[in-house]
Image 1 (cartoon, rainbow, N blue to C red):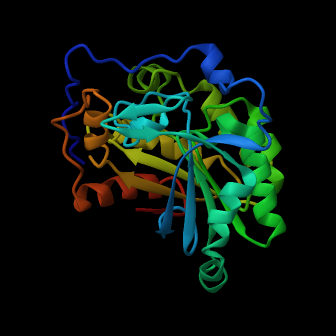
Image 2 (image 1 turned 90 degrees about the horizontal axis):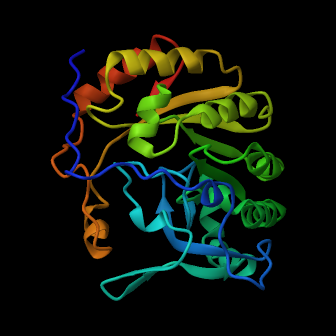
Image 3 (image 1 turned 45 degrees about the horizontal axis):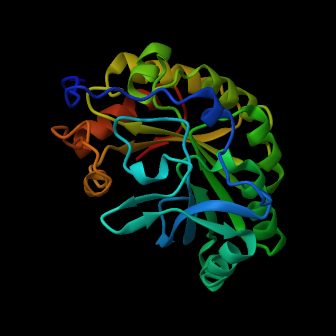
Length: 287
C-alpha cells in the first residue's frame, strides 16, 4: 500500500503540550458541585455514528490532547471561549442535560440507541460524567462514551459500571510521534486500553483509529496498532475514521490557524487498504 506524503504543518505550529495541572484536573469555578454541574459544549441529535441506533450526543468541554487534526478546537479549553459573537461552553446541571436526552427517548427504544458522551474528553469531568451516565441507565437509556483514554485510570474506573459502549481512540502506536502530533505521549493511553480490556466484560468495547494521511496511515504504524489490538481479549472491533476538514471554520472563528490546511481526506480505496492491514491482525475492522 502506498502511503501519502507526511503533511506540512503551518509554519510555527506545534501540538501544544498541556500542563499536568490541566491534564489531571478539570478547572472549574469555585463554589459548585462537580457531580451536579459540568462544562457543556453542545448537543447533537439524530446521530447514527456515535454508538448503536439513534443517539443523542452530549459534548463536554476540556481535552488533554492538542491533536493537529482536531475537528472540534472549541472543545479543547476547559473554560468558556468566544469567537465572532458565539460562546463555546456553558455550565449545565445533570438534570438540564437529562431533560435534553429525554426528548429523544422514543427513538432510543425503537432503534437500540441512547445517550453518548463525547468531547473534548468527557472523562476529564469524571464526576459529572458518572452522574449523567448513572441517571441515564436508571431510566433504561443505553449509554456510550467516546474517549481519548488520556485520563487517569480512576476517571475511567468510576464510570465503567454505568457504560454500555466505550469507543477508545488509538491515534498512534509510536510514543514520540504521538507526542509530536497530539502534545502528549501515548503511554498512559495504551496502559488504560489494556486495563479496560481486563475490566469490560459487560461493555461493548471498540477501538477507533482516526486515520490521518501522512501521520498514521503508513503500513508500519497500522501493523503496530493491529498487533497491539490483537492482544485485547474483550475488544469487539476496530473502526477506522477518515480524516475530515469540518472544523476549519471554527478555527477561523476562534482566531486560530488550522495546522493542516493543505491536507486532503483519504479516498475510500485507501481506507479499505488500511482496513485490510488491521484485519490481518484482528477479526473485525470497519470504516
